[in-house]
Image 1 (cartoon, rainbow, N blue to C red):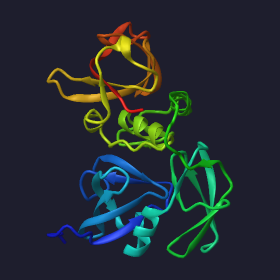
Image 2 (image 1 turned 30 degrees about the vertical axis):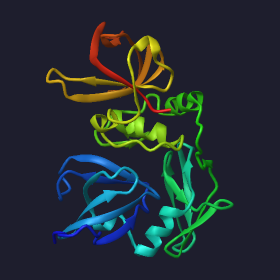
Image 3 (image 1 turned 60 degrees about the vertical axis):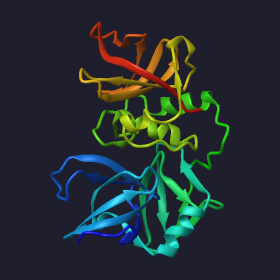
Length: 267
């Protein structure tokens, strides 16, 4: 069922650790992103048991299976959107669902809307969480952002991933900034439109973003500067490498792996 107006067909929220967002409405289609626990969404199209959704956090669209998220009312969606939202800072922690008497894992970067004294409610379901979570505020220092980036070090690369067990380059950058309360768009080409231009690498600060392009000039990679000579990024795994005005230099292969296109400052 196609949606011919701007109003969402349904509202929902991820009640699982991470649900895959796919390019097309079938299980073998490539995963383009993930929705972590507590992140809300709107449904903009239905096709059999598939739903084309828009992630509320970054407006990213794609297809998810209808069984993978919890449908909520418009009132609950608005309420969740207006509540202060804590973000999980433990790599992995256990969530307790008291209403359905079960427990399940949640991952770093998951959202806990309305968390109050380690408990919260979503659409009448009572949750409690004994792990570490923060309500990120404004004025984040670059030192904290760098600390967050190191939390993902050696995470394997996974196209469309946003979790420490599999993450892509733009997902890594997005999640590191989410932990500091700063919302970035999903893809590297989109993130390259945010923030302010930094003209030279010699003028860069820790936490600035470096973007890289292919032979056609299309931005296809992003990483976070640790200093003016070092970058942390997801390429094969989340790793640190040397960077100069040419791009990223991989000391294992003794070659440049990515060509520098531009620098952006978000903080």
